[in-house]
Image 1 (cartoon, one colour):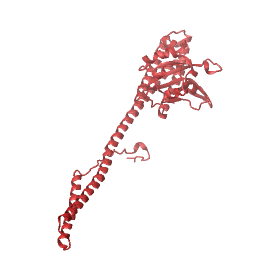
Image 2 (cartoon, helix red, strand yellow):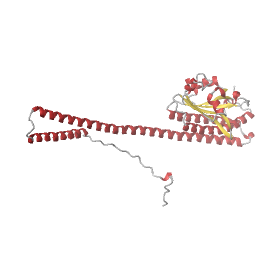
Image 3 (spheres, helix red, strand yellow):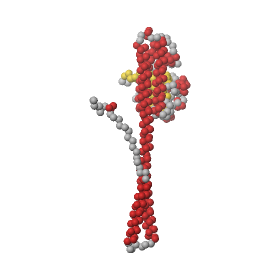
Image 4 (cartoon, one colour):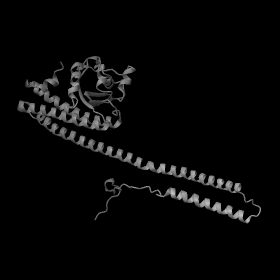
Length: 349
């Protein structure tokens, strides 16, 4: 039998967790009492023997009482020192189970989050793979051979894909931040203008959990200029080094006039947000941006590097999906195909 390669981390034996118990003497106070009694007895016997054999000692009551008082004070002092010493030790040891319980709870929570992260990633890539095959099959076929029914079918499948992505992201980020999170996909409409004021952005898709309570604001404030929203304007501005926007305390930024939003009631829906572009790098200093993927909530906890990287991972998949979906929409337009989902993608009015 071949020996296992110990340098391979997958061949290493996983050590079992070590559990330990702190044992303290159940009769600790009995030992304290016994110690002080024994010392007191020795001192008493010593004084009695000394007085008995010493002819110069006066045998009077005051002398004996004084000796006994000194003895009692000595015993009480020793007892007090023992109480303080062992009390501090017990206090120190009693903290160990509490620390262990806290660490155990944190480990279990991190394990839950890690499992959900893996599950969420698997589901997203699973649906993306299936959608990519459907889109590519139509793109590879001659346009004349593509039926209207097959176009409608793949357009509907694209909607199902977005539902699955946003639903799983909403569940994952809600678990991570311990707050209800909202997922939004926004798309850009470039008018090829010299200034960025005519570059419009609108909400294209929201997760089903938050769609109902947020759709009114989308109707009122969408589309709008990218310059009307601080997050989008920063990402689009080449003068900024960051290609994302994250903030856990938007009200504070708003108070010092460093955050703006076309929706005047934005603070009623969220106080924290993380926004990444749905984009691809096309050159040393250029990037093609189709839109934005964002997550927001009230409690915060979004502005972390791990959250940013995971949202970028999903945004990259969305860029590929929307690029091919746009080809499908263009094909549908050449066939004069009408559909509610096609209108939602192409109609910016």
